[in-house]
Length: 268
Ligand SMILES: [Zn+2]
Image (cartoon, rainbow, N blue to C red; front, side, top):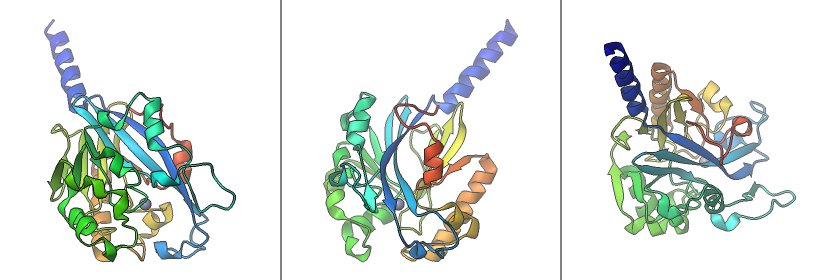
């Protein structure tokens, strides 16, 4: 009897720590490049010329978190011949397929505020926004300094409820969903660390890397705001991966994306 109680206690504490998370992955567009040399690679160092653009939804018993919001909603439509970007089904329509609208999303957070990560941000203005103070300043006070910031995509978040971060942040207070500060690509770039019960620990890269080759070769894109800071963030995240044994998903990796089970399937 005692043994049984102990086993139940262990089982309970184990599942409580992991919080029964669910992770949904959505196709929020594609980007194609003839020349990738501004990503810190020469064109012969990788054959990859197409990037996947994801959105993610994390379900926790205390609420849902949207992580990254894809390409701009006004680019949704059929893929055209020769297009360099395409986005066939909007994140809003895809959420509907699992019975959700933005009103069901408690928190929204973005790895950073480049246009391919906040494309639907305004639709989540009633969520609580989790943002690094440095990104808040960069995106709202001097967006003109970074050509990949497009304020019309996110300016409706200006009056949203928000939690302004200065470093790492435990979203639900139980360690199951951690925002990890990893600046350099932009001033307040961040990655997301998840503790999934069956899948195990998982880290979503943001744009710490765009290609497997930039990870392998430790390269930084020309358009990063701070190359040295990016290398320090790579060291931090790589150490976290080693310490936790986490699976690491480079968000833009199309080959990886093609191997994943997209929503309505989920990881738990
Ligand atoms: Zn990106």
